[in-house]
Structure formats: structure tokens, C-alpha cells
Image 1 (cartoon, rainbow, N blue to C red):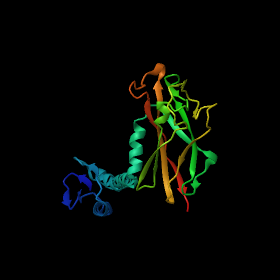
Image 2 (cartoon, rainbow, N blue to C red):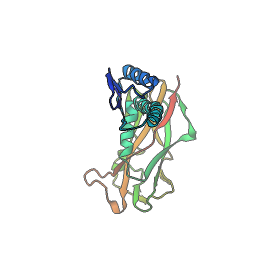
Image 3 (cartoon, rainbow, N blue to C red):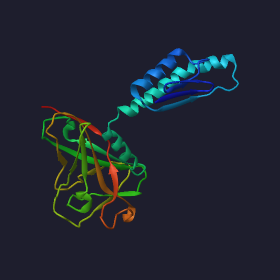
Image 4 (spheres, one colour):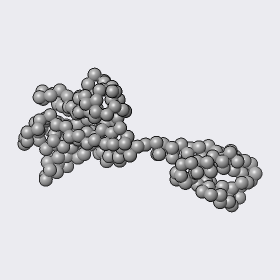
Length: 241
């Protein structure tokens, strides 16, 4: 429901407005949006002891405020559940630490069941505060890699790890503003890989890793031996039949 609140207003269905200085166009937009979308957006406009000139100015500003409110609601409703879940996970990333993905050859179109190869790049705005586990030897942090693939209606969660055998080997590298690549140099593989769905369509992908720890091991979970979760940005691809 969109509610445009104005002092000394009258209530009409789901919209509250005042006729003295609110243009009819603004009233019509508010009512139409409320009926068609059932969204919730509160825009409170109050006028106390204002002269005629200020009423005119306020009346002219109301449509712009209302349009801004409507655009915000439209943006919220245009996001899929997958995008909202990704946004929530992204907010949990430690401040200043970023994970970006690089797809092999910059490829964006694939065939059903293709293998998508990618690399992870990590950066930190606070030099020498964070470090990253970089070995691809099947340790617990490597085994916790998880890719999320969605066409907007269904989501696939796919683990990815270069080596499937258990290992107790670890190697930590300090993060700074220069991108740190994983798979790291001199590893068994140059790329991570995931298998794409067999249904054609447009898809979005992001990954979540648990390689990140504070310097000297702070943040490494003693029970699971994995670090803080870190979520990448979304990438868009298309699977063509």
C-alpha cells in the first residue's frame, strides 16, 4: 500500500491525501499504484502554518517525492528472491574485503551442461589485516566452496573443489589492495569449475568461500577449520539450446 500522508487529509481507499495543495495528478498516481501493486511506501508530507506561496511550492514538490517513492518500491519488487538472498549475504562480508570472479575467456553464453571455468580474486582495503588460505589440496576451507546458480525461479547449490581427498595442509597469504588469485599460483589447476544446468535460459551465479581469516589465524573456526564466509558479486550468463 502506498500512503501519501498530508495533514488535514481525507482517506480514500489506501491513499491519504489533502486536496488543498496536492495536485490531482499526484492523487491519481498514488491511488493507481496502490490498487495495482499493493506495495508499501510511506511518504509523509505535513504542512503547519504555511502561507499560500509555500503551499504552492509544496504542492509542486509532492509529485516528485511520490515518483521517487514509487521508483524505490518498483526497484524492491523487481528483485528476485535469489537476488535478495545474495544481497543479504553480501552485507555479511567483512568491511573492505571483496571477492570478484573472472570467467575463462570472458565467456557469457554456454550450452546446456557445459563446464564454466572461473577464478576468484580477493582484495582488502585494510592492508595486512586479513589473510587468505590459498592451497587447493582438499583441506576443510577448500571443501567448503559453494556456488549458487539460479534462473530466477529455482536455485542450485553446487560445491566445487579442485581436490576431493582430505588434507591437513594449509597456506595463508596476507591480503591487500592488489588482487590475490585463487586458484593460487603453482597449484594443480588454473581454474575452478562448475557444471551448468541443462535447461536453457538466463542465469545468475555467485560463490561463497570460507578462506578468509584475520592475521595470525583469528577467525578460524576450531571445530570446522574454516574461516569467515565471503560472498562474491553476481555474474550473468545465458544457456542457449
